[in-house]
Length: 310
Image (cartoon, rainbow, N blue to C red):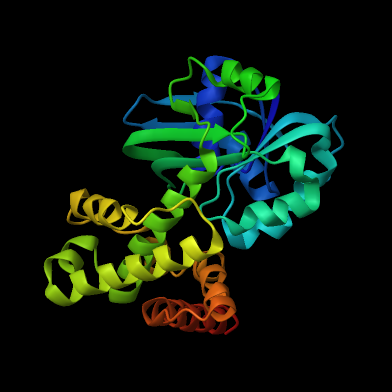
């Protein structure tokens, strides 16, 4: 299968690189600055699972090539619209789109653009970043990419994708319950990113104080209530399951959204929290913790915009 990876950043660069390492036909869709960097240095991955480097195939959005079989989309939510514009010329009638964004709202946007049949479900579990030279630094034991049909069917194209992803030095996992897995991750990230961005600390001090532990439970209760009202496959038992997950992670763990704030980067406030809050109005649900989290993030975004325009 001909694979187009959108961007060669921390996530796309890693999983695309592992597919290249296996010998798959992978092309990266990149901006001019990243293209120049990759031409000079190559795609370099420094990983706890083994280092690799390649001179990858690359295209920019203004080039004309034949449509790809698979497009892997791992951008941030605030880049989704521009990414859709960039990939449209490379998406043919039978191209399948595999998004790895967190949350759910991007699925609706992609379906509206490319149609119900062409959009898969997907997510990933990995800790990666780019250093100042554009090297992909991967530090977590987890390097999982999970994919599947949103319907749960094991279609012929999913079987072909499974073969393409097999025997790769990263964990490409097929799921026949991909939407449930996406909602579960959305719940976890909403709690983790909401609490850590609000309190500006790693998770350890939050869960160890009475006030912090109460806030974690408030966030979990509010998010689960909203998701259940929407019709998401989230059970009551997930409240305790998510709290157990939060208690099991390292004391110094921060959410990626918190790290982005610390770097003065944009955040996905609307993608995660506005999406949930719009349903509180629709169904008359009280969600004061989520409103506080969202307000905090929007104030940060406003300040960031002001700073960037000075």
